[in-house]
Length: 371
Image (tube, rainbow, N blue to C red):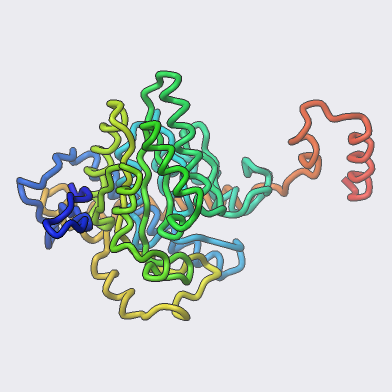
């Protein structure tokens, strides 16, 4: 399973192998087939395709000046969607910055997502959170944060609490390769294994922490082997192989739910576009590197497998594409029609019963605004 291996005869611990299931042209050997139901694979494929289309539309809208910011996921769709798909709905997801697709997979209404980006009255946070930083508590999806690595101890702490309560839920803690240099990461890894917290810590290693390459992030041969220092199992997975990602995550979840402790997954993938719509990645990386990874496109790889299963074809692809485009277009129209945030929420969102002196200030402000 790509687990960190024992020491070699020389006494040096060797790096974990890369777990891969999908071969060339979508083929899977019987020995490696994880037995994922076709219905699940189709849902994963649609989820991956959806966020790819979302990237295209939202980057266009950003260039048109209709939104201010967008964080793309292109190239990481399998790592995001296939890992999230392995969890049960009762499990909690503590995301980093590339897991918005997991919230959509959990049922976050697209209109709510766009309203958050616009920061209007329909936004759950009334414009007080950075764009593309969603909260979806009813889908057990914790609030996103730009603070590097903080969500990892949150996931571990929630897992420790679940264990104390006797609740057999499992927590997912996502992070990027850059977060492995944060103190929060190391503290969380230590607590997770010492207390055998029921969690799966998932590193989407996309090779770039904005402009910092992996080679300058760590001297370790792999990220997965960092688990060894904490006595934790570390598994290195081909992050562009949806089957491998799902299988490795599912195994880690089953292990955690059985009370056998946490697992650290390194999903080896690549950020094809910039860190965000504000980033020009061509200034710090070679385009030949991008081309090499585009040839390993995760959506194309899963599509090839579905073709092998006779579960998909061009007609179904065209139909799905039309449905996705229509759904996105309608949600954009609905969200853009949302009114601006009511100034009263500056106080009413803080106080259930507004104190008299603040009510006076609020009324005066509203009069000055002509409201």
